Length: 190
Image (cartoon, rainbow, N blue to C red; front, side):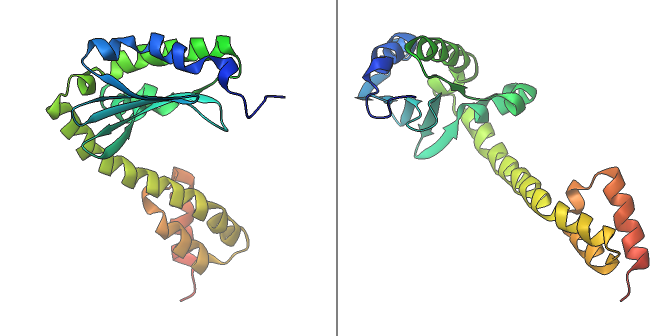
């Protein structure tokens, strides 16, 4: 069982400082160091490296001109496939914290480099696309909530309800669901 109160045994602060020393070289200054967080700032860009208080995940976040971004936001621009599968690493030992921070620093150097340099064009692209990504995510969540209800209505022969529900997630229908929608629309009693 992990000791939830004493995080000092993970040595997070010195390990984070070592793994992210490259941000100091890029002109950032450390502005905060806590047992689960080290924060750096340069102009209007902040980077926080963290070890989740409950999740124990090693991760980082970026705040640029007051707007919060994740590393995967930047990955989506340059490597969308990887961004879909990217997950934070859980670290429950000093060794796994060190490995997780080192791996994270490699990812930040690769995918966060334009941000570290203050590349305004890259940030504008991310900001613009992020709105689209949020809309797509919203559609995905909505479809996952509606799908079981639509399937149930279809199985029960309530085609009016099935057509209504499938219609609400039209952008996310599988080919089989599109056929069910067409069938239900043809059968619904109106």
